[in-house]
Length: 573
Image 1 (cartoon, one colour):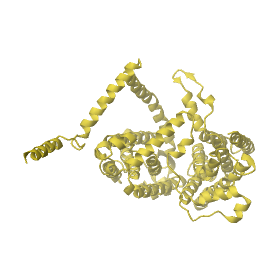
Image 2 (cartoon, helix red, strand yellow):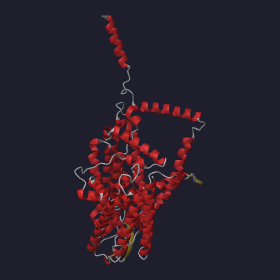
Image 3 (cartoon, rainbow, N blue to C red):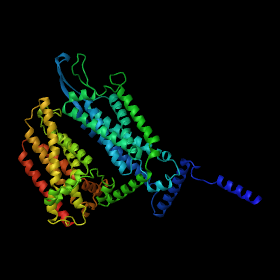
Image 4 (spheres, rainbow, N blue to C red):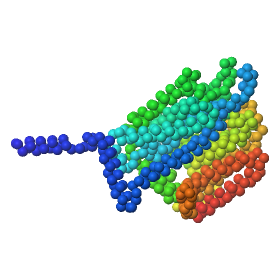
């Protein structure tokens, strides 16, 4: 039987030369694909009459913009960091006089809160296909079993690690420099920030892996709670905040002393383990991002999120913002047992519908109330509700603006009914009464929840003022300012819900020395609600106290115009 033996030998030889995908190193395969893409790109550019060096000019332009606007942004952050200085009077035992030094408690508290916010953003990015993005083509032809995900995703993971470190160090060094310390401690702050910035990145990559998703959510919740408590303590009472965070600075006699930024950051000083701890945590996070987590990433989910994000981006460039809601995936409802209240359903069906929507999202409702309460607290403190003895140093426009922005962000959960109304094919046609009546009905629940969030912020402010013995002489104007901000926030939500497609006039070319600026106008249109709330909140802070009547009349007129414009757009859509 010689023939079968020769056939089997031929099959074995053929199998020995068969490339099953595991015999080719990914690096060599990637270089080969890159060369093919480069050749095809050159051919397309030559056929179109273009210049292959255009990409070099594009890179040059990006670097030039970074060199021009980077120092400007750094200086702006440093100017904002001047609010982190601590000004107090040292006791007679240490020699009378005033000292003005960086408040390390506020820097640490702000860093903890920033870590929590960045981790929450990383969780949202995981639902949108990031941070380790995977295109549908890669999911099919590269990560469908051909190569190990760790090998394929290692380069983009390293790029993310480097990018997070640069951004964090950029912001931390600017704030620390603005707080008033020297070059050495500022550099140590940058190192710590670059290391700790890997934690939110690891949280986002972990959220892309089903087995690590719950742990990522838990870490984010812990960071938000700890950062919120620390920031609140440092804002309300700096002395207690320093003790709470564990960075209190004491003089040799036990009294309070100037607290420089470099305490706990330079080896040989008390608390020098901060750098060591940041290094251990940061290196562990880098190891997770580059080694452990990529092999467990859900490639199909990442590719689906990438596809939705690309589609939403194209829609935004074309002036359509409706697809942005699909980027984060469907809304998760937890309170499945909640039912429509019967008595309310007969009298106010729209209000019953909105109330049911909030009851079925208890986690989102609790989070929005917490964010709204913090926003109300900042508005009251920024308006000087606790008098000149407030930790914030009296009235502060930054606190008012940030508080108004937090209230506007929290109101996105409360105003789900308005978005549902705007998403209808013919808004207001499902129920009698027209769009105006239904907008008024949809505004009931947001108003009630906004009042509850404001009450939470006011309760915390009153409790702290009573405990610290601070004056509450300016409580009336501060409460009025908070009410005006809430009215403005809800009116802006109605205005924004009235249109999801940019008007054609936004795309009118705007010739400037830097080129066409129409995309900036389009971006401003998408952020119109934020811009109106932030700008008006700053003006309200400038107008009060002393101009409460003018401020109230102005906000009432602006809110009426915003609501009328939103209803008119809904009726005409």
